[in-house]
Length: 297
Image (tube, rainbow, N blue to C red; front, side):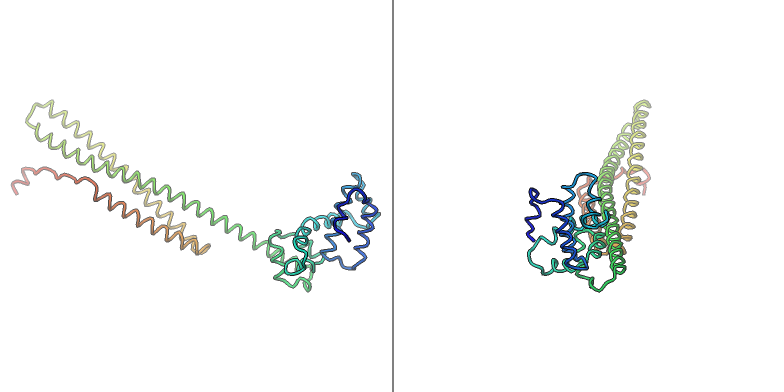
């Protein structure tokens, strides 16, 4: 039958379409997928031509189909029609599709389109009972669901590790800035101590002002050191959380575990190298002036 003739809407009538469907049904006692697709195409065509509300009556009177069977066939035509029309030959995937029966094809609709072709090449569908096929489809759907869940969990872990890395970078920067500030404050405190020693014999007011300045600097220094300690605690906790996340990844995704383990090692090595360079470039801390007790020794 000429496939182009199906689309000639100007001359075809519902009666003509019904006659074609009956002819296809009578060609074989078992409706194969290719026949189901052809019937489904014609049912879709007829549905467009028949007035609204008359389709079910036409089904029962013209082609002896229930509404549910007709809609199943139309669904099959929409799902498998493109697969069967991709190539004119009947080898490989197309040949596997043509061997499917109507019931088998309907059960396989439970799988995504990209999974069906691979699925039918893995099983002897011609010798499988419908119940066995349904179970196999359910098993595949469960496996796909578990795979998708595992992928989502892996993506979540990657996102969490990425966010943690950003937080560690920020904490490291702030800790470095605070550490440099601490060193600078230490130098200022020593300078103030020298100034205090110089003016020790001057009037009480001048000495009192110097003492106040020194006390203020010491307070600021203590505050900076406290902030630095807090940042170090944050970094330590961040690394603990990172190690836990990577350890949990070992069983779920060994490749991801190895990848992030390497990334973490590299990150720590780079961080240590930066700290070493920063230590070398930091200004030297001046030594405290000798006290009378030191001189006596």
